[in-house]
Length: 187
Image (cartoon, rainbow, N blue to C red; front, top):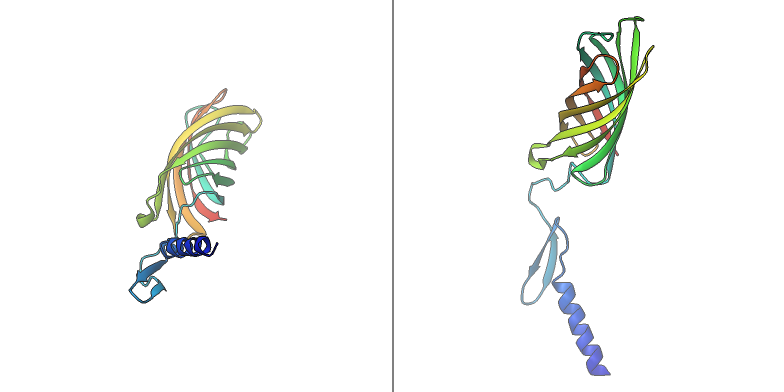
């Protein structure tokens, strides 16, 4: 029985001395001691574009319309985005602009998107593509589809700035392009 305990204890010691202690620490093994010290390199080890992150977006908009019932206009909006992994996520947003030329009023829109991004951690940027659908609500309600491209710049793990553009195919009134720029608060 003593031999089995001695063998198990030896295996346990061997396994724990070879264990990885993480990216922020380094292990030095000399003949007499095993030392674990904090890394002192100056590289930032944090991940700016993480999996399972949720963000709230606040943005301004500018719509560029084809000829028809809508006209060009400025507006704003808010959005909510969740990335399930580092590269793929879902987003929902509500936005408006002053483009209803029939009734001199606002056009309110809601949309949902599937988003694919490719982060470059060292540059703090992530270009992204997105596509989805939604609706416009003014005097005449309609559904639409959209696709676009954008770029996000992370100032820290908790917030960043972004800009993107999309083309919106409306089902009954004129199509339009929408440009957005804003701030992203990450949780």
